[in-house]
Image 1 (cartoon, rainbow, N blue to C red):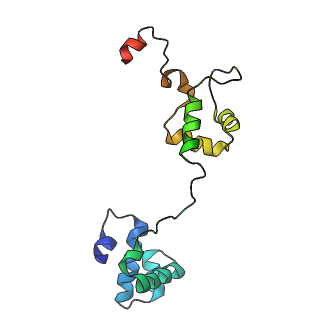
Image 2 (spheres, rainbow, N blue to C red):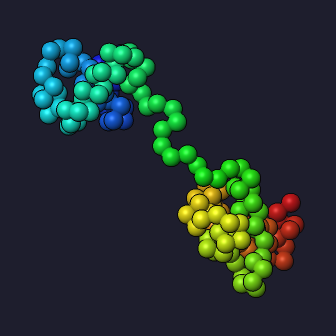
Image 3 (cartoon, helix red, strand yellow):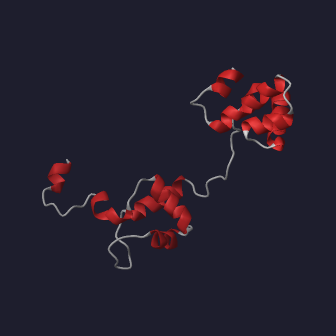
Length: 142
């Protein structure tokens, strides 16, 4: 199994290098030689050898819960997207990320992430929210 992961051309390189470290260690290759062949530092190579010795093959994949957790929940997501489909209260023609962030009380980057995730294009509010300059739009839509 390890050799399949290490030699597969379609495996992500970060996942393919981990079993390569284990296989080369099993062959008796020196740590410095393993690091040179895989492109990993000696410290990282040593880390994967230790994890494999302690936990077995399951430790070679990424652990769950890695990375920074999201700072918004489903309620924030719905609030931002619902507000984006309305007309801004300040009289402007469309929302921008900064205005949405001020009204909802989230950071600009969080609102931007929600808008991207929701596949909303703020500059196309007119069409996205079911409005169109086409007088027959309602008939065509149904």
